[in-house]
Image (cartoon, rainbow, N blue to C red; front, side, top):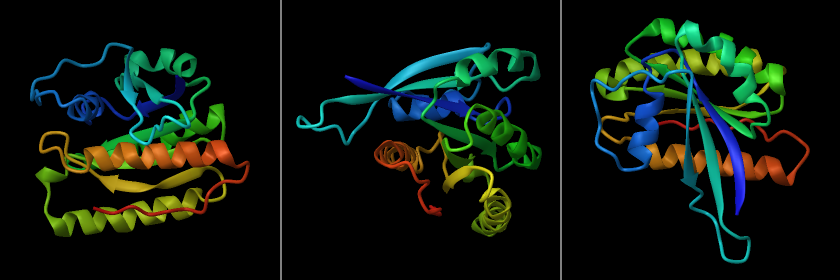
Amino acid sequence: MQTYKIAIVGDGGVGKSSLLDAKKSKNFLSNRAITVGVDFDFIPIEKSTPENGESQFLVMDLGGQKRFHFVHDMYIQGIKGAIILFDVSRFRTFQNIKKWISLIIKENSQIPILLIGNKCDLITNDEIKLFEKDLNSLIDEYTETCNLYGFIFTSAKEKVNINETFTICEEMILWEQKTEEPKALGIIKN
């Protein structure tokens, strides 16, 4: 079985573990405990075929609190893709995306990165449009220095765009495995 290591990073409390729980069809826990250091899980890749063999993601869920940052470099090594989450109801978590991008590109500037605005159930469509503008500006800023694949809005609580998120990860990572050239930037919107 082919395994692709990916990392999910972002500030504490943005919903990284809840996103994984939603993908694995677990119930949403509003009082979920923080991830201490790092947690990991295996997620089957849905586009696996008998001809190509089965594949899976080894997902490294990195604790976002500052006290766990010392272990991040160790778990980022060898990743094939990254998901950076922010909480759309806490703008500070959006502002911190740049530090998470720096963590990823320190390992390899060509690692494909998907940005996720989580907890979209907590804001209005007009507020989502404001984030789209900010995300497009951020992507423009980083186009030359890293491989930002695009962005999507999710809600782990309401299970909005959860399967779509992992389908996009499959596409961005499997595409990167087939070519040496970075893919043209794709924007994925809710």
